[in-house]
Length: 262
Image (cartoon, rainbow, N blue to C red; front, side, top):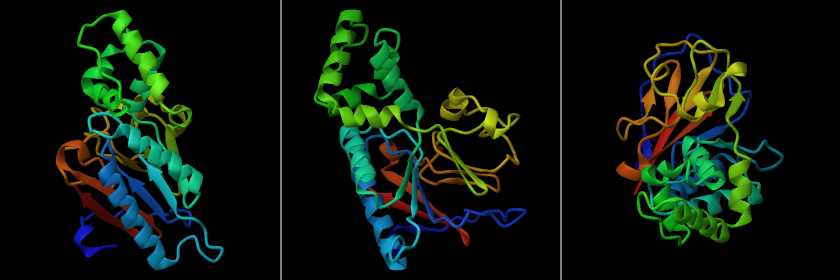
């Protein structure tokens, strides 16, 4: 990948070699409506795949895992979702799309806009605007919220809604578990509650580990630098605020971190 985009992060040596089951995995942090950064990240990934001939000559397709929070806060949520629909149709990656808490919040607003009006205050207004829908004023009431929901459904392609409804809560590959927010440390992965996978911070971020697998997650950002420890890899670097989107490449040799900037 372009040397201008590559960063190196020291990582504590794991207690054993980590397996990806032979997969080459690209994991992408929270995008939050930054279509410009998503385009740059995909371009970097494409160059890397081309350099190594991944997916060619009968070789296994590289795996692309996006960690959720594709929408809200940034200006181009609709374009981001359209890009994800395009990625699914192209079939150039083994694509896995995780659900984030912001996607959950959008779906809840579509179901009951009055009960989930708070979504508009933490990024939903920007998502409405990206579809050409004027967000209702705060406290506008049930009729205005219903009209906004109906207008969003009128403007949102069916493919976008289908994609949102099919997002996954967790992906397991080798010694890694990919989730949006994190896990409840005292529960096996098989018994995690979806609400924790999408929302957890306290109890996970401050846990020392080890966990059942190395957890690759987004959701919580502290700066434009990823959070890398022996037991978890946090790839959310606040793209909507910092202009930095982070990608981790994981394979049998280890991990490489790449950042693209707006």
